[in-house]
Amino acid sequence: MKHDRFWPETAPEVAEAAVAGLDRYGSVVFKIGMLRLDGDASQRLAYRIAGELRDELIRSGAPKEMRLEIDVAQESPLPHGSSQPASYLTPSVLDQPDWDPAWRTFPGCTAHTMYQGIFSADPGEALSATTYYDWLRILHDVKAARFMGNDNAPSTASWLGDNLGRAVRTGRAPSLAYPTLGLTETALLAAPLLRCGRPVAAELKDRFPLLRTLSTTCPCRDCGGEVTRVFCNLASLTIGLTWPQFRSRYEVQVPVERFDLLIAHNLTTLRGCWGRVVEPLRLVLDTPSGPEYEAWLSRAWRRLDA
Image 1 (cartoon, rainbow, N blue to C red):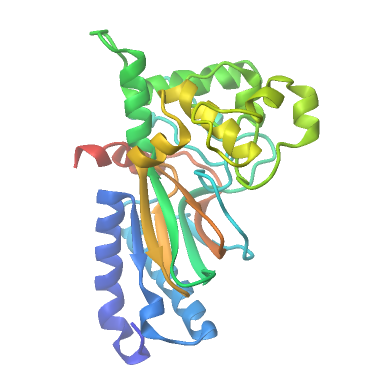
Image 2: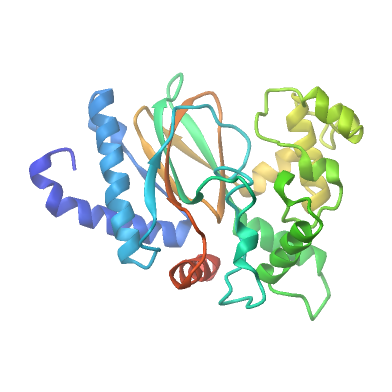
């Protein structure tokens, strides 16, 4: 793919293999850095790969309206989905017919991100790690713990849909940071837990006094920042794990070098990365509904069964 004359032959094969990887594992890596191109050439290649991948995903059943968006370079930390909470996993109406697709979009939200790519513009010193967390597995484990011994437990998708629907109906949804694990404490639902090295905003502490306590101490007693300590408390309440235990169980570290491109299924994986500058490339859809979207989403829920 480094040379234009080979592109027509190699690009479709690479894109097809990448789609298979996304369907099976939720994320793929393009080792552009190994080609030792300069920054501009590497960036152009990343954009070209993302465009080819979009076309192959559509050929594989993704909605035809899905398009590529390129964002400005930025820093990114704790586990999250792109545009959280504007883009988040929901049931497909093919699996839960009473789910309302209108609940997937909050007022004022931007386009719905289906796949999240990050171009490693500056990995910092040596190699840097992008961390991925299997959101489907996390949801499944939390649901299983909540319904242990219950022979009539709902499916994970139905349980998730019930939690989200309740949040939407109570009017809290637009401010929710992680609305899908059965939490009811508004302070934990409303706190934006993304920038691990920063303190919790003073206005949030004034609004939710509980955050003062949670940002001061945490179950593992070892988290170094206020936001990280709140996240540790959230993980402990939702799944019974401290932040270090959560990382040990669910975190997959992907070492990357300068100019590598990573692409992940945005709804079924969370991601984080520390100490680096990344350039987001997103495959987005304006309206997350319709037969093609519902079929694509239903297939995404079955990745763990593959």
